[in-house]
Image 1 (spheres, rainbow, N blue to C red):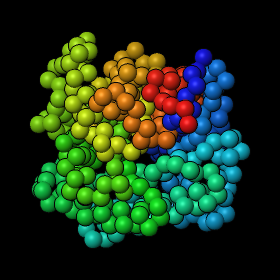
Image 2 (tube, helix red, strand yellow; image 1 turned 30 degrees about the vertical axis):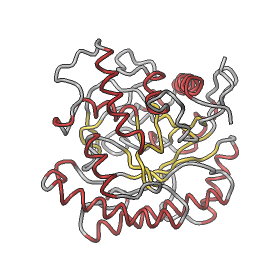
Image 3 (spheres, rainbow, N blue to C red; image 1 turned 120 degrees about the vertical axis):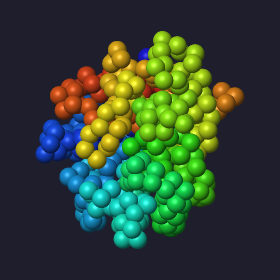
Length: 349
């Protein structure tokens, strides 16, 4: 049975229905289907509390109308689901632009952050969104960043500060997702450097995804920042834990959004996401993480006390095959481990 804790709230991400899907892959899964699968999941009477969404077609209209925002709110409320964090469409394929690109690119980046802040406010006003952040990244490749790391970081920080000004006007916070395929965010060290250069604490923070941050410890795209040796023996749990502790101690103070996830320690590429980690199922025997224990490294302070920073946590099943996503048991298994995370590291509120 689940414990008494009712915080953080348990959310499911909707964008796995879109990311990695398309003409050269599998067809997208529509938002209604993703919501229905989430709403039907249940473990010992406990259900998901909400969803996190991608502000991009075909799930949501980037240039949404008031009627479309109302329809989205109604769609979630119909299933007793809240809406939490919103992924801003900052990438060129969905109308954004590189945060370290031309003036036009950077203007597109900030403009689309504004649109997502507007959607966030609309959903707050409609009563379905009481917490959550606007999620961003640099929309730039590590290879482009590496041509001039100092200038690249400075430019990303400048763009992010402009985006922070927009977010502040809407009462929003931005969370930069640490993923090795994004320049200036491709290692834990680069991530800290870029956040410090942006210098907007309280408005911008870190979005930690357990699958992606595991790769931080391995030094992909940034060997100088590796915390695990090359050819690391995954049976050495103590060394893995030590690497994860070092990384989370550096990034936890910045962390304002959190994805529970699993990873098998391999790097793949798909579409616009080059050299990144594909999330594994909870039940994957090759999963390298002890999900409940390692989630606690993000949800608890150095002294073991609860951070209580995130009012909700989210599962990200990015790049799961459609066959897997269409099975209800997949989401029941996911919900089951989310409940265990909350039982171990949550609170009553």
